[in-house]
Length: 92
Image (cartoon, rainbow, N blue to C red):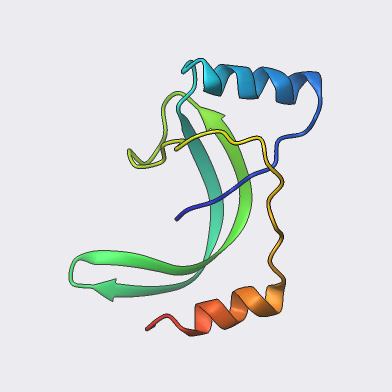
């Protein structure tokens, strides 16, 4: 899973960004509710899930949940219909 997140322009948000930039925090945690899965051999693949929460952490539940970087740019919000069209291209 990949994601881009906007951090609130508040003292807590500023502190969170400073900690990430300084390397104090380098991971994140994701809380989700599974919606659709599939099996690939012994591996359970989460095809669709409802995102419940995202938080910064020093000890992630999944070793690959690393923060790739911090950018100070506005991101484009993709409409639901566009996202659904992209998802329909996946071989599920």
